Image (cartoon, rainbow, N blue to C red; front, top):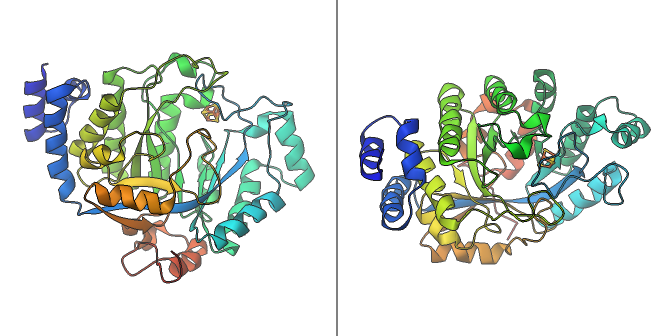
Amino acid sequence: MDFDRAFAELRTGEPRLEHLAPLLRATGGELSRLIELASEVRRSLGPEVTYSRNVFLPITNLCRNRCWYCGFRQEPGSERAKFMRPEEVAELLELAKEAGCSEALLTLGERPEVHEEARRALDELGYREMTDYLEDLCKLALSYGLLPHTNAGILSERKLRQLRRWNASMGLMLECAAELPAHRESPGKDPKLRLEMIEMAGKLKIPFTTGLLIGIGEGFEDRARSLLELMRIHEKYGHIQEIIVQPFIPKPGTPMANCPSPSEEELLAVVAVARLMMPSMNIQVAPNLVRDVGRFLIAGANDLGGISPVTPDFINPERAWPELEALRMMIRSAGFIPRERLPIYPCFARDPRFVSDEVCAALIELMDEFGYRRLNDVR
Ligand code: SF4
């Protein structure tokens, strides 16, 4: 199908795979038309662009998977393999509290305990399962007045239920709804498993962050299918709080070290199409991973994710986050209004079905009357 027909179809009907792929391929004048339309739709969300202030806690970089583009995972036994102890986590939480953060972002490789090194660390700390340790770290974060958001890869229903109580929101990137060579050594990247977990989070009413990783060998149809799957799940459960559109950035020493990042145009097309498909969804781009943040805001993004004043982006450590004031300037100069949010978006923060009793007390302390971050005493 050509662009004009696909464009007309998207304006009038239900998004369908055969319409989306030509739009995701758009460049030049066609991309400008797509962005113009997405921009119009984005306007109905109001002028605000949100971000949250977090501390990034890389609990462990041990992982059962081996994604060909990943620079975070380390081999067990290597000098760079890490497993954070509670006192290291507490130290960062203390710094985060002083810096006015509201979010404790717990990130780790998937099922690290398949490796002897992680198993031993858990035994020494007195935990049977990784999720038991994570549960205690979430409680620790709450005791500092920070709201946990855990990304632990694929979790069973039992483990999701366990962590739900102690997390304001949780996340799992879909990355791509198609099977890709880059995931050949990553059993946890089976798209079926990931879609099932995102659905399970919906059944359990967990405010959920997910998204697409662009440029890891997927085609335009795969991108379309990924967006359609997320739209389908969200229509069914209403729990997806944000969709991240993240570019692949090559990392030295990985099998994909010499592969190019996707072009800014490809990313803009994904943002614009996502906005047109899901007019009220929060669409996020990371300000340290794209060149021109303003273009993405105009194309339909309305969130810039978690920014940390105390820790680097451990997934893309070579890409420093902007200072908070610089970030606010970026937003203003694109014609929008910066607004700090919590790791749980306002509509979920104000809906008791999505907030556990355990999280509620810390949430009330941090939230303003509209469900955003209360900013009485933080800059
Ligand atoms: S699952 Fe995540 S941490 Fe593990 S190898 Fe893949 S990208 Fe890296």
